[in-house]
Amino acid sequence: MEYLELLAYDWFIRLTPKISDEDPKITLIKISESDIGALGRWPVTDKTLARAMEILLKANPRAIGLDIYRDILVPPGSEELNRIISENPQIVGVMKFGINGVLPQAIIRNTEQVGFNDIVVDQGGIVRRALLFLDDGENVYNAFALRLASLYLQAEGITPQADPANPSYIRLGKTTIKPFETNDGAYVQADARGYQFLLDLNNADVSFRSFSFSDLLSGKIPPDSVRNKIIIIGVDAQSVKDFFYTPLSRGFKADQQIIGVVLHAQIVSQLLRFALDGTRPIYSSSEGEEFLWIFLWSLIGCVIGLRSRSVLRFSLLSGGGFAILFGIAYFAFLTRVWIPLVPPSLSFFISFVVVMAYMSNHEKKKRALLMQLFSQHVSKEIAEMIWQQKDQLLIDGRLSSQKMMDTVFFLDLKGFTAMSEKMDPENLLDWLNSYMESMAGLIMEHGGVVDNYVGDSIKADFGIPLPRRSEKEVRSDAINAVTCALSMEKEIKRLNIIWGEKGLPAMGMRVGIFTGLVVAGLLGSSRRLKYTTIGDTVNIASRLESYGKEIGKDTLCRIFIGETTLGYLDSRFITERIGEVSLKGKEESIVIYQVLGERTPGCHKTSQEVIK
View 1 (cartoon, rainbow, N blue to C red):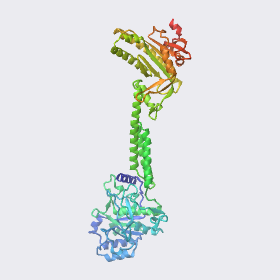
View 2 (view 1 turned 60 degrees about the vertical axis):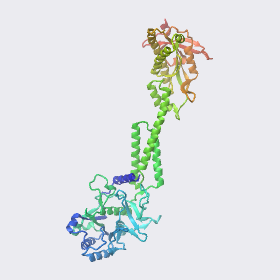
View 3 (view 1 turned 90 degrees about the horizontal axis):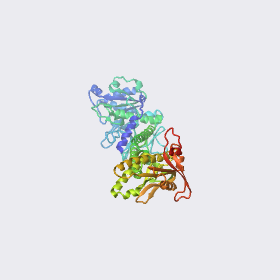
View 4 (view 1 turned 180 degrees about the vertical axis):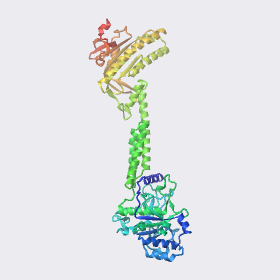
């Protein structure tokens, strides 16, 4: 990820606010194509350079840097140029380091008036680092920029020192410059030879006052632009290739390269800011800190992935996560700390997607479990509500057993046994299925759950699988159960007409309804599980359906309810008290009521009046 992380570094460099004011300590003299044309030749003769040096020295600069190779004499005027250079130690020439390097001018070889101008270039041709020292195993050489900065700082009483805490580190003023290591930041096995540091390139294009070489020779440069300043003379001509790409080069500018003289000015300016302003160098975090940083964002991705349930939330959370990560990394960079951006971003995204995919698969399994148990027994609306509130039902991915208030509903056909004896099995099953489909549809329409089919009987529940939290919800379930039973009475009347046309006998139904506590959960073996309800309430509802088969035998749908159910119905139904009876298997007696119909608005007749 080195390439991507270095691109992020470049972005941070470009986004960092630049010093737009002119640096009062540095002035540039550029030799352009027009200057070369005016001189009539290249390289510049020693005589011309000697004249330029005399003009500059009259204004008392602190340092003059000549960023032009002079390994061979260019007469005329060579003796005069050598004299000027030897008599003025503030003049610094350049050399190129290495076997294929370029030697400095003979007069300054092995003196402090020479510095190497080698530039560290990363893959892709980008300059992100600068050198302070190089050695060949025998001698240590200073960088051109360091020589110039040191000459300027001498007047301020500042000289390069060894750091007291770590003598192998160089210190300028109060700032210690930690040397670049081979794996710092995004770099992997980078060439860290010599003493390198990261460039901040904080100076804007207009930060350095510039003049042409012709202006210098014609005396047009104001003395104030030279006095007590660092003067750097370099080439700004296409015919003399001295151009570099930096992080600032990427963008929409037509000319994205900077010339060598400006690059050296950037390096010198950064060294002066270290020494005079206490500016911190750019440091990278340690490998241990980077590991923890990446791991942290992996955890954040996992946590956010657990909370993503929709495309919108996915987009918002992932976008927000990336924005926060970028903001933290950029803010840290503004404080001169380079922390990774790309690896934690990928770690965050991969963890986010993997966990979200896992949760999505887990959700599908849970949905499949719930839908397998309920989808064929409840309406689509109830099924969706069950899914939305699945956390109340599922614990660790398994359906939990719960005690809850439920209105249990039992339905049975009257005379089914006699009916079944008159029909062949195939027709009987078709007929029964059409009946069951109609009745089960009504149960689901009224918010009930079809619990079980046993022969011609149906068991249903109004109040599961989601626990009821208020009396209002329990009352609604009881009302829905009774309303469903009355709707069934209308439906059986319609079905009897159809059956009569087919020569089949008319049928009636018995319904038992009771409201109370039940235990709802999975019942069965590991191979076949069924969600159902058990408890005394279920037994009572079943006994109510089968009690007193002779009572109401002339009605199409006889509906018996318990007293607890009646207590939730208010006065919207017409009921008749049957009495306090003892049901089979029950020691305590139960008060039974028969539902005769739904009270119409404005009707205040009693049950006995309706019977009369």
